[in-house]
Length: 136
Image 1 (cartoon, rainbow, N blue to C red):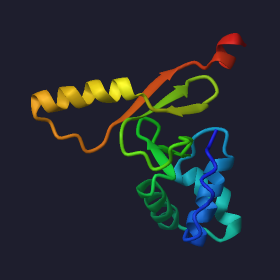
Image 2: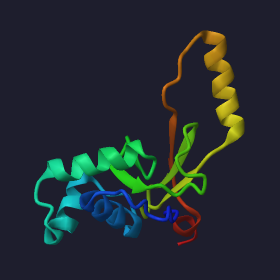
Image 3: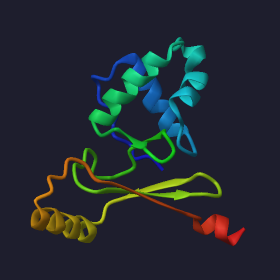
C-alpha cells in the first residue's frame, strides 16, 4: 500500500494525476496502463505519462519495477530514501510490498567498498507468492 506523502504542492497537474492513479492501484501499472486510465483526464500521449513518471521517480514518490516494466507509488514511510529499496512482488495477485533492510544494504556496501565498485542505485526485486495467495 502506498504511503501518503502529503502530496507536495509543486507537482504539475500531470504528475498529480499519475501519482493519484498509482496510489489507488492495487498492483503496478505500466505507462500504457496509466495512459488508458487517464485519457478521460486529458492525458493522451505516452510522452505526457513518461515525463510525469520520470519526475515522480526522480523525487522518490514512485518507483519503477524493472522486471515488470511497471510503476508503483512509494510505500516507504521514510520517503525519498536513497539506499537499498526492495520489492516483494506476488506472482499470484500482483501485489507489491516495498521495504528496506539495513543489514542487506550494509553487506552490499561492504562488498562494493572491498571491490572498488561504485554503487549508483540498488533495487532488489523478490518474486514469489504473498500470504493471501498461499492461503487461497
